[in-house]
Amino acid sequence: PKAQGKDLRKTERELNSMTEVKEDILNQISALNKESADINERISKASQKVVNAEKMFRTREKDYAQHQEETLRKVELNKIIANGNQKEGKLQDQITPIRQKARVKETERNRLRLEGKEEEQKRAGLVNDFNNDYERITTLTIQINAFFSREQ
Image (cartoon, rainbow, N blue to C red; front, side, top):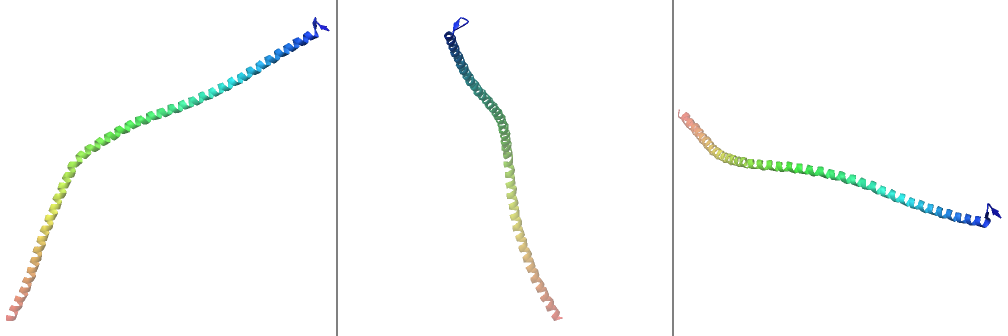
């Protein structure tokens, strides 16, 4: 049997050949789809790496900027501390003579107190002597008055 000048066997062979070609093409399509999926997966992983790298870069950039600010603040604070130490040194230089004067005044005060106590003790002794003398004179005066009163 012939169909349009072809026999059945030739048509089956052509059909088998075309089926094999179709299967080869389908296998190639499947392989290409798999390769495309692999490429898409690698692209996705690469994109994620880029996103992570950008995040890390921004974080490090922020950290660097903060570190720079902290460094500048540290320099400012060190200047302030240096100025404070310099002023403290000047004040220490000024306070030394004042302390010396205060010690001299304290020594003078203590000397005057000691002299005042000695003078007070002398005067207290004189007052005691005077009071003792007064009592003796008063006693003698009473005795003399008593003696003269008896004679009269």
